[in-house]
Image (tube, rainbow, N blue to C red; front, top):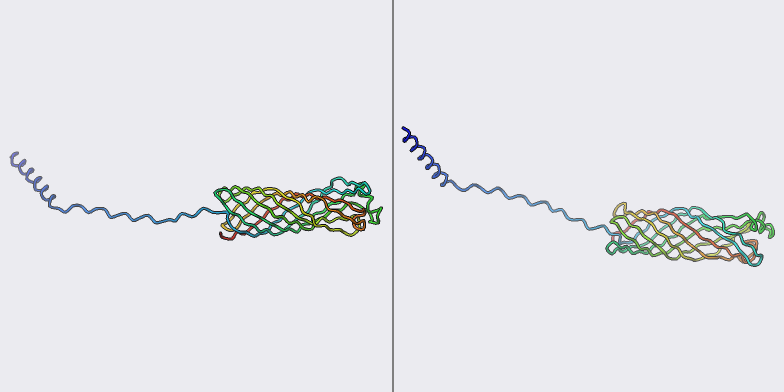
Length: 243
């Protein structure tokens, strides 16, 4: 009986192997769908032309002197707000950014020294209460810029030329005005809010040398030499055109 069962099991196994050999090979798994192509965005660049607005505060000092009457005012403070327009352009090489920038600002810079000897100027020359008054209504700069970019953030230094009007008077005497040119230098931080909108914070120092108020009708003394030095802290918002 055992022999019959063993022989039957062997026969079934052999038949199963023969049947399996006659079956077609299993189907290969379907091919995987290719991954969707995602284009790599080009790196953002500072290169391009831009225009914008700036505003801030100017503060500095002025001095009056004249050899005619041996008068020297000493240094006194001048300050006031400013607001204007900016235009410029950048070209980026690696992380180095080279640029040119110009701006023109209205400002209301003014300071008065009423201590001696300024207090006596207007009284002696018909100017009322007297004093050394220095003011400025505008400032313009044209500068080169060198920056280092950290993608959309850049730190930069800047230097160039500057011009302003130095206005002088004493007491109730009329103002005299002289356009003077000097130099300016400073630095700042600028960031890209969007691909086209840039914001910056900067500091500039400007030295305009000396202006001369030649008439005592304006300044109370003949040939007064007046200096103006100005620091500016301002913010700016610029629109950069696509390069």
